[in-house]
Structure formats: C-alpha cells, structure tokens
Length: 523
Image 1 (cartoon, rainbow, N blue to C red):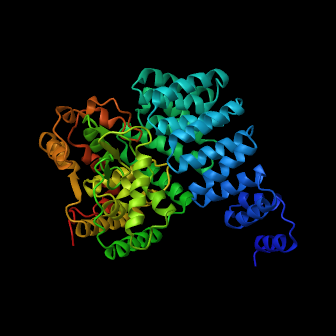
Image 2: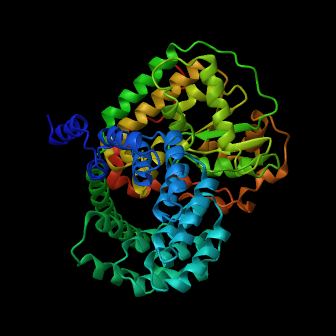
Image 3: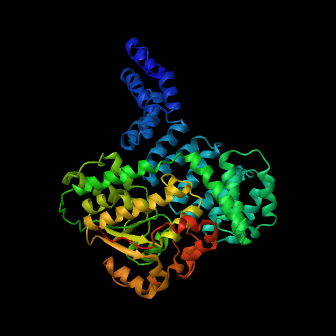
C-alpha cells in the first residue's frame, strides 16, 4: 500500500487528523485522499476555514464545481479577509463558466491584497475571455502605475491594444516589454501571432540573444515559434519548418497527449447515442436559441460566427467551455439520457449562456463541441448546429502551424496524432449525420469564401432568421474575436486562405497528402 494511503488510514484509526496531512496530499495531487481527511476535520470543526477551503480546492480538482462553490463560499464567509480564499472561489466560478461571478471574486481578492499583481492578471485574463477589452485595457493602465516594469502587464497591454485595433500603441508596448524584460519569451510568441517580425527593429537579434540562454522547454517553444515567423517572412520554408517541428515535438513531450484515449472517448459517444431513444422534448419557445458553431479547430468557425453575429437578433459569445464540463458534472457520459436529465442539461446550459444578457439567438463557437452533438440534438430541440468544414490539408496544416496554449488540443503537436484525430473527427461527424438527420447545417469554408453572396444568405435562411444585409460585411463587425483568427475576420472575405499549406508542400507534403480529399456525409 502506498505510504500516503497508510497515512490516511492511520489518521482515521487513531482519530488524529490534522490539517498538515490533507494539505500535503492536495499539494502533491491526491485530492481524492485529502477529501476524506478534510471532511473528518470538518465533522469536528464545521467552521474551520482552512479545511473548508482545502475541501473546496479538492472538489475543483475533481471538477465538482457546484459543491466546490458552496464550500469555498463558506471558507470565505468564516475568513473574509483572506484574499486567496476569494480567488479560489473565483476559480470555481470561472471553471464552471460563471465569468461575472468569477470576476467579482477576483476583484475582492485584489481589494484584500492590493500589492498582489497575480490577482490583477487573473482579472485581465477573464476580461479578455469575456471580450471586455476596453475594461481590461483600463485595468492594465491602472496596474502599470503600480508595476511599471512588470512584463505580464506590458505584454497584456500590447495584446489588448492589438485587439482594439490600436496597432501603433500596441507596438510601443511590445517594444517596451522586449527592452525592459528581454527574457519574457511569451511576448515574442504573442507578438508574431499578429505581426510581422520586421515591424520591430532588431527583433531577430533579440531572439538570437535569448536563444543563447539556458532555456526551459516552455521558453524554447515560444522562441522557436518566433523563429518560424522570422523565416516565413523571408520565405525560408526549410528553416521555418525545422523550427516548427522542433517546437511541436517539445510541446508534445510536455503535454503527454494520448490519441488512444481520444479514440476510446469517440467510441463511447457513438455507443451511447446509438442506444439513445428519441426523447421528443417540447421546444422551449420562451428561451433563447443557441447556435452551436463547431468543427475542427482552425476550420473557419470565427468567420462563421462573425457573419451570423452581424444579424441584429444574434448575440456573439465566442468560444464557451460550458457544455463539456456540464456533461461531466451531471454524470451524463456513457448512458442514454433520460427525459429529466436532458431537460436539466438544457436549462443549465441556457442559464449559463444567458448570464451576460440575452437575444433571440446566442452563439457558442467552441469548435470541439462537435464531440457533443448527441447531447445538443437530444436535449435542445431548438438548437441550431452549424458544422464548419474545411479542406483537410488546409485545416490540419493550420492546426499544426498554430501555437495552442489551452487544454484539449494536444493532438495538434504531433503529425501522427493529428492525422488520426482528423480521421476520428470525420468518422464521428458521419455518425452524427446518420443519427440526427437534418439537425446539422454543413458550411463549407472554401465555398463560403469563393461565393459569399450565395453561401451567406443560404446560411442565414437555414438558421431560420430573416435576411439582413449586414451579414455580408463581417469585416465591419465591432465584436472582439478572442482567438488567433482576430486579424483575419477584420478583413474582407478573400479567397486563397486555404492554400497557405502549399508554401510548405516540399517539407510537409509527405504527410499532408495522406489526408482525405473528400467528406463523408454519412455511412
């Protein structure tokens, strides 16, 4: 028996449970064992704020956000001056998709500990995720007075100004962070995500200087992405590809991604919904209609959402990581849904979707919701499902070329995993088409950019909305796009965006040409 299990058993047997043991277990990533010890302490001391907070953090680790929120709120109630307790409560709200409440908690934490910059940065990150760039910029300007040389403050200011279209000011801050904090590698990779390297003088020299330092994997990855951009600007495709492959290899090792686990999940989903009876839930006429815009990452979902979002009846919400956690929290993976479960999922999702306002239609463009189409189609009879599909080579190349920092996209860091994942995706989409005929609206990205005058009206009509001319001009949208597609959607729709991979055909053609060149609409 492992030593920590022995310690837990002895603590119970001897009734000598102290906070040191469960806190240590939580610190080493064993929340399952820590929970029972925190509970034992709370049985004797139900107002112990340390134990309550520890239990809440354990519940966050287990993604039980509903109970975590209750427990963490109690911890803050009994220790209202503890800034970290307010921040932990904010984390629980954030991870359960309740951004407004999370922001309030982080604001409380900042007031309780005004000298702690990381609480400010949490608020900044959250405001960016909420597309509240003006508010985030104002907060950063205020924070700059207190921390004038903080690299995260400077780098975020540059990113927020970029998002607001204030390019010249953004470049000033990019220069500032690279001058004051040259070892802050995140600034280099973030800069080249939206700018040409030549826009900053001596950018390559700065990269070369930093590359001579002893680097950890995270710093090396960011610098290699910057080198990719440098070589791309000079059309040095061999050198660019060499740096890209090296960066991806490092990312893959760091993430420890397993495609076999993904394949098992897809099999579970197909099995579950092969046996799912039609529930025939009545449509909810009084609730807003969600529009799920989904597909592979980098397939064109940002453009699709921006087009739809130009309609006056639509509220754009961007990529929302709501539905997946809800499915897991409600224990819905694996068995067919019952009527009451489907209704509960629908109500919970719509409640979360509408927390920042409402419109007749609200978008959710989390691409990987394609895995959850069974839950959408079964529990949300009014929902619109728009599947954006793109040329497989263009889509997979864009995934491989992009630096993803979030969770759930580890397949993009390895060529074999990427090819297998695309096959799994295409197979699952074929299954959904067969299982839920007529529920999925396919939007072909190449057809959209080649003939927007035909494709956009057809899309709006398929969504059941009246036509509005504004939908033909997505480049005029004032909505903030929070993904890597930010700069693209501000341009007029143009052809040729799916041909970028051909620049690398000599280097990557051997694996890109293994991808399918057609779509399976059904079995």
